[in-house]
Length: 230
Image 1 (cartoon, one colour):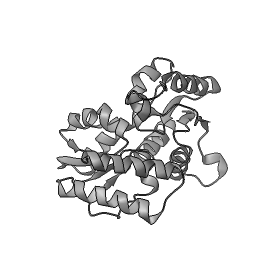
Image 2 (cartoon, rainbow, N blue to C red):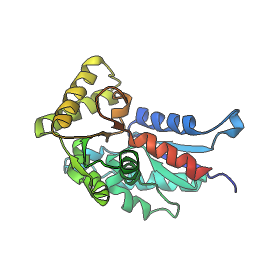
Image 3 (cartoon, rainbow, N blue to C red):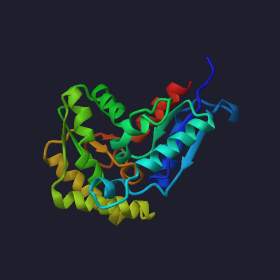
Image 4 (cartoon, helix red, strand yellow):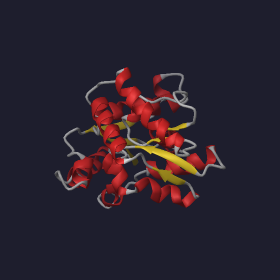
């Protein structure tokens, strides 16, 4: 069976796109260049801010998201992965603009969490305010009877500040410390695992940093993309 070509709808942000690309490479069993998968990336950082749009404070990103998806299809991609959690709110509308499938990172993360921690009842979500508002995580996790708990309003704003700091290239201990404080409060509320639910979060929060497992949707998406392509 011929290998499939992966299309990455990227640029949201560029470092999160590199992270997904890098994880796909790492999950690919390869001994030489030719063993790796063909990947087409449309790294379009000009796509309007997804959170601002969801909060009614910014331009609609959907036309740019659809255009990127069509570019990937025209370039020869067999399926698409999106390196942004919040953009998944627009997934069904993006899907209507292309004939090739788009993998749903949120759905894959829910399924993987249930497989990895079968008895799990509660997960804490670290994400952008846009992702919290859309409820895209509770919708998918509910299918597996897993409750998704959120930080309080102030901590949601702190998480958002940390996400924008990471987008600006700040991976300092101060930013990480702020994230860890929010995570600890979620664990105190009963979270048995933490979802790194914004593609910037895994750049700063790693497995082993806290007392519960970290669910990295980017990593899950990368692994599934490699399986599908091979």
